[in-house]
Length: 471
Ligand code: 2HG
Ligand code: ZN
Image (cartoon, rainbow, N blue to C red):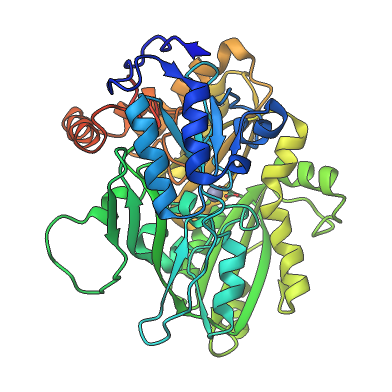
């Protein structure tokens, strides 16, 4: 039945759609993707409507699952004509509410998961073309056979899709060596709100022909276009790998160690977590404690090279000061050490619905920020801190924040981050979670430019309204 346009939304502007008629839209979409790929049954839509922390929940007008770029273009053309907002979704592992619908926004969820083709690796170029729905761990497996690897890796590798990683410019664990997703994408194919396809898949390493559209779309969180395919840069797969876990007395000691590790060209990862987080991980997962003693801070380090990097890592760790070190070379042992860090997210989730604040701090400010945090929180919520220490990327997870305190706590923490020169979103994006705080990290002039870009690419405002830019 025709439904009224929700408050705050533009009316459908195409004469063909005097009101948003969901039945009719569903019919038209079914003709494009096949009826099996238009979901309206609440039970089938449910997994597309809630983010994986359970914090962001909405109701989709319907879920549509196109199978290729041409279908994505037709889906967008129809939604655009009907004035219906569209939320693009990949593996739905995002943490800022940018890939799920809102409770009453009437969004169509556009799932890209069926775009899961992985092309042949081009060994001469060191590149591969993938569909937006390819899952990261499938990509890792596919390219390994060519002696290559994709530089970006993260704990959600078994669900996160490349399209979502590109939309959020995902960082993850190996940024210290390979950079964020942006540095590892050579080109894109994407569909604009009105169904226009942009093809920048050639992946030419040198191509200075005007504005960098690929760079613009990376990290745009589904607000400027929908990524359908990507040309990815690959890096040599390094066969010799060593992982170490170090227990330390303080964050300052961990940072001193990072400074000494940075001189190693084999350094791939330097991650940290703290005593409270480890205790929760042990309790949830049943893993044995890594050391007999508990330490305030733990640093997880990985080095990789053509030649065994274990010796050079040992040389640096020997000077790490008081604490203990566990070193692993075999894959299974390395995975065990990594699990203490990677299983933080699920362990925190098992204990409740966390308030997640993903921030970057200048490294010199990090210990001071952490020491200040109890004063900033003033007893509101239990903090669990972990993250990517080499980049100063702190995942501030807070459990048990009362609903009425969430806004004040978020503001207080993000203001503190901005005051010491950090960023209010390191790698998870702005999403809906931080749209109203964007001014803390971006100037009025920058936000005005961002609004102009949004208006130019999506003049009807149908792509992910309320994400990145509020209102
Ligand atoms: C990670 O580093 C992810 O594991 C998730 O970015 C962080 O759960 C989080 O807050
Ligand atoms: Zn992270």
